[in-house]
Image (cartoon, rainbow, N blue to C red; front, side, top):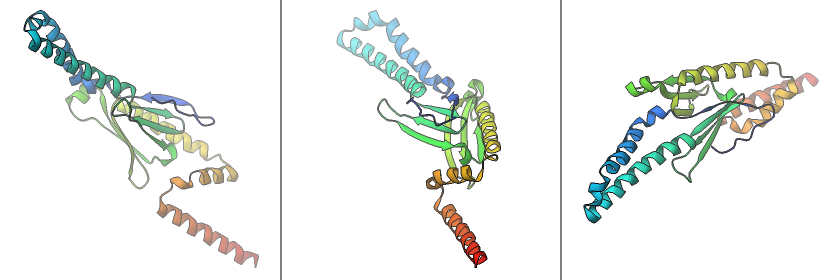
Length: 206
C-alpha cells in the first residue's frame, strides 16, 4: 500500500484488507500444483523433456496462484482514518488506483455476506452511499465487514458531533475547501441561496 499523507489532526484508525478466506480456492490450487508434481518428481523427470515440461508448468501455475494471493493482500487495502477512507486498488504489480472518500460525504453504510464461504470465513462486501443514494465506494470481500460497518458509523457520527462546534469562519473554510467535490446541482442550489441572501441584504441597507 502506498504511504498515505495524513492531514492535520488526522490519524489512522484501521487498515482494511480482503479476507484470506476469499482466496481459499487459489490457496488450495497453489498447494496442489506444487505438492503433486513434487511428489511425482522422480517419475516425471524419467519421462525426459515432457515430464520436465509438465513439472515446470505445474510449478509455474502454483507460483502464479501464490502471487495472486500476495498481490491481493498487499496491494489492495483501505486506510480508515478519523476523517476519510482512502482505498488502494491494484490488479497487478504496476497498476494502482487510489480513491478517497470523506466521512462527511457518507450518508448510508451497508454490508453484505453472500455464499457459504463468506459465512464460514466471515467476509463480505461493504458499500458507502451519499445522500443521493449514489455509491461512493464498495469494499470487496473484506474481513469482518460488520466491525468495519460499526467503526465507520461511529466515526461518521463523532465527526458530525465535532463539526457542530465549528465557528462561522471554520464552517466557511470547510465549505470553500470542498466546493469542487459538490455535484453541479448542489452548487447551483448554493449559488441561488447566496444570491437571495445578498439581494435581501442589499434591500435592507436601502
